[in-house]
Amino acid sequence: MTLLSSEPPLDFRPLGCKECLEGKPLGFDITMAYQPIIDPHTKTVFAYEALVRGKDGAGAGEVLSRVTDTNRYIFDQTCRVTAIQIAARLGIECNLSINFLPNAVYRPETCIRATIEAADQFGLPVNRIIFEVTEAEPINDPAHLQNIFDEYRDRGFITAIDDFGSGYAGLNLLTKFKPQILKLDMELCQGIATDVIKRTITHGAIETAHALGIKVIAEGVEEQGDLDMLRELNVDYFQGYILCKPKTEALPEPDYSAL
Image (cartoon, rainbow, N blue to C red; front, top):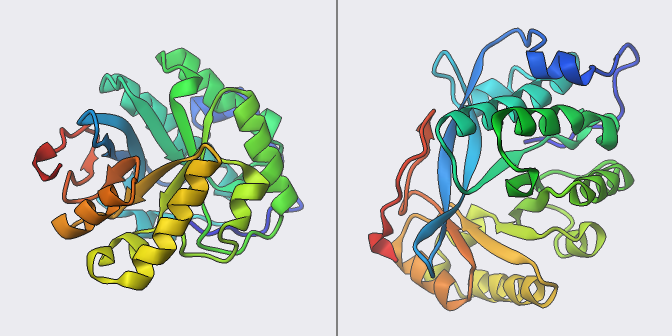
């Protein structure tokens, strides 16, 4: 995900909630793959992350390359509603994690309505929806993102910073946005079993997050040694191929044997 300027195009007309919910044409068809986030203590699924895919088989990168200044707003709304609709149809019983584009949120209190309406329509409580924002790119309008985080928390959603450790702001994001969840970037997690620098940095991030009451997810975990080291460092939840790959329009069952 790329955090572009939060300023809308001059000719942008904020979409009405009903218009978003009923599916104003995006110009291409999307669907969702789901990957579980695992609680290693209970060996249960804490959440499924919704990952955008093209109906034509396109991966996330190709789909995101189709997002422009003219369709960014409806793309973000379509992703949210589609993620909720499919997850509800599949009978999700845990949390649902959705990535969002801060620059696609014109006014948080207005643009969140389509998500709330979709959650109500499909029977998914808002307190089981996690919104993730990446820190992998510079944040051009911190005040705007702060307003989004505040509004979402006030509405009962769970907030998360994704790709932590890959970007520019680092621990400063925790003090500004006060997320409930922190997702460690896969570049920190992969190879951590044999890399003392990664271990030191990650240990500090986890200790800081826990001191602030923030839960930590390790993502992109693929090797047993890395998983074991991250458990030793007190990571709360795990996501990665060693446990389960994403599956399109399905809620795949994890392989808990690595735990």
